[in-house]
Image (cartoon, rainbow, N blue to C red; front, side):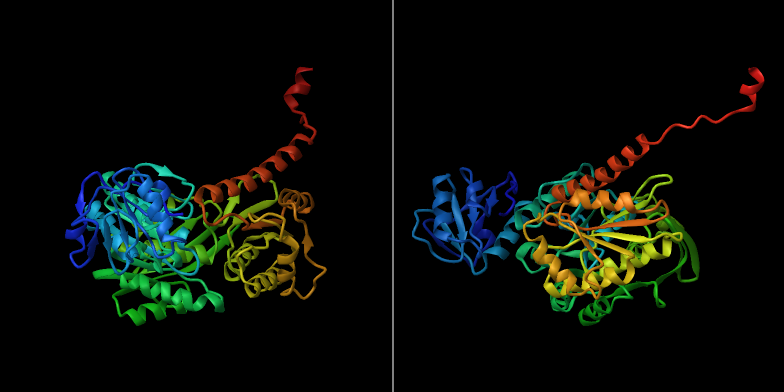
Length: 502
């Protein structure tokens, strides 16, 4: 269901906005608010009936009953309401929302982030970079949003025609100078971005599955088509898909890389538990970045943000300083603090490639202990991708425990069989449908110098639910540690002064 926020308090003429459209039931319709869900209609609203509506006539009837002033549609409907007939309602609704909000993107530095992996982390680090450069910055990501002043974790993303327009208008009205939007493939293949123009498109890395490779290429191409004249693409040079998309588009690019020469390059100088040291080079300047956001994949996300900083003419050391304040990202290589405890890391690990990146990073960080993984059998992954996750976990982890995630226990065994299809030693992984029991079992059996990765299993279609699920897993770990600490007998150490006093 589409988000239905108000578009603007001012009225706009549909005839002036769409001069080539046809009108029935009236000469014109004046719009002050447009909605795409008939249930949300209020008196005076205009309903845009999108092509994916189950029943356009029923939607129009619902709008009529709720006092709608008219409808925006692709077909004439037998209903006594003024109708504006256009050839593409989705694009028309995007344009109308933009006009109602007085084109907020024209006053914002627009940054879009698209790619296979690392979009959320890159978007949040990019927002931090822009704030460090002196821009009040709004952002909209899978983990939440901010209009430049107020941060929130909404029940659903602003990823519809009306909600994106409303978000950008709120960002402008809050005094933001820049906006960062995480662009999903679904958004790019919908009318959501039709009214948007970007100054910078960031193409992240990652290796998509074969099923997703074509969709990713299409998404990158669509994103680059939304670049303004004179816009720039920031490209992960270690990603063949990103480099190919930039080549096809023929747009100005800045390239960052860990494994090749680029405009901004870096090498991992040292990697310790909870800390990575990077030597970052731009031109003839080199600086050190020490960050608790560990691993090569996270380093690539940080390089993308640093590259944007250099594009904004920040000195390299200031660009690094701007992102150094980001110490932790929920569910993105998030290390749960605990002195003398088993190291626990939370990571979304939404694909076999991302899971492999996380496990390789943790293997380099560990100090002689074993690597455990509490892996979730994802409900929406293809069977081939799920099997690939099984192969990856068996290759890099010492112990694997499979458990359920956001989808619950109902299909756990069926999906677990898909995971086991990629495993050679099918007796190796332990299957525990109860998520809390699985996490607690691993913590009971892991040694103090071991590392535990809790990989994914959180809802990805709601920032509120995802953040809540991440916090729930963190709470399970914290509660388990508290129980262990409470069972330890206190030890009173002797002191020479006490003996002297006696």
